[in-house]
Amino acid sequence: FLIPLRLRQSSRYSDVPMTETMILEIGLPTSLGPGSSFYRKYQRIALRIENVMRSLQEEGFRVVVPLIYESRLIGFIGLGDKADHSPYYNEDVQLLDAIRLSVSIYLHNHIYFESLESSRNQARSEAQRLSQFLADRRVVRRDLDEHTLIYKSEIMHQSVEQVHRASGSNRPVLITGETGTGKELIARLIHHSDREGKPFVVVNCAAIPASLLEDEIFGHIKGAFTDARSDRLGKAAEAGEGTLFFDEVGEMPLELQAKLLRLLQDGQFSPVGDNRTIRAQCRFIFATNRNLKASIAEGLFREDLYYRINAFAVELPPLRERKEDIGALAEHFCRDMARELGRSDVRIESDALSALESYSWPGNIRELQNVLLRALAGSDARVMVRADLPQELQAEKQRVIPTRKSVAIHATEEIVLEEPLNDLVENYTRRVIEAALEKTGGNRTHAAGLLGLGRTALLYRMKQLGL
Image (cartoon, rainbow, N blue to C red):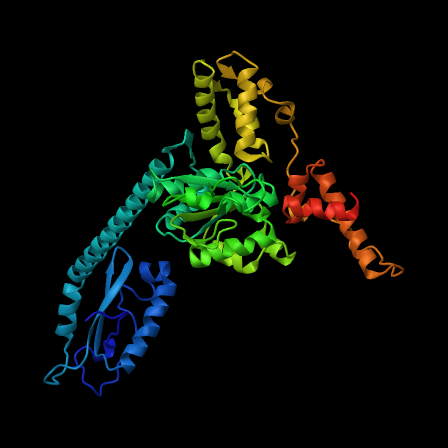
């Protein structure tokens, strides 16, 4: 059997048989011991060998021969007592020493081929992973209602993996991301995975007045209210066996959230004014640009509803975090827009592309599309140059969208306790909101994101504070 390291008999006993009671001297053979090139070059290994040899002697080994190939220690041949308990002689050790090189070569080749097989398996695994990645790319490049999802960044690849996991289930999906990151496009991708050809119905919770939202979702029967002159199907019924997509679900009023929760829990709903219940057959997908956990803390969103809609989570990164995708996206948009304008393909000059990649894109992909459309409309040239882009993209030092950490109010200021606590909190809140608005150039949507609030919540706070 193979063991680590070697034991040898002292030269003083070279003509005496090695017996169980014989005192053995621990050491390295002359070719490996002090004075040898091996010892000088690999002294630490040689000392370690001697230490292990001592422990082997204590375990009852009588002869241990090292297996070394190309200055690499591969293993050892170790012999215990013979079956008949006869002694070992020097010729036994010499025989082992003679076959040592052959065994070393064999083991070296065996280890090498095992390593080679392991490398082959790893290469196969990497090839499969690459194949799957390319398959994902082919899937997400499908045309979906004249839109195409294009990416090559690792962060977007992770989001697409989340999409694939969500697509394999009929449970609700929550898509989060800033405005313009393509949440509806992702929702359509999930819908097309297993419900292609069936309705994809959108409810924009931010665009529909709160008083009309319930009717929009659930429908009504004739006579349910003054203007209800006939029955009307809601979006939940229109979706059928397809997908019902709630865009900006974070803007839904609290009183309606309870009815949505019932729809998700029971799979049933009632049109306005009707006592009958209708079973929903559709899949539910939700999207928001709000921090729903912050909304829960503010009492603006139900916690039980949040956990119900968040069965599968898909988080879309902002465009500024996927810089390597900007070039491919810009080329794709330019090609499509040029075709719509009846023009030949427009190439983006490298300096213009550099400007696109260095911009922070607060409006994300939607802003990129608008910028490229304006640039194409303003020039007939076949090459887009930096001068064709808006001024904010041409500036060397562009405005960067601040992170939450960049909004700071000096907390080290001395607190004067001459006002009631509510007034102190109100004044501090006012200063924080004013600082956020100043940082974002007065853009309320960006200021809300900076503060971890929804736009509606920020406007509500501003109204309370008289801002």
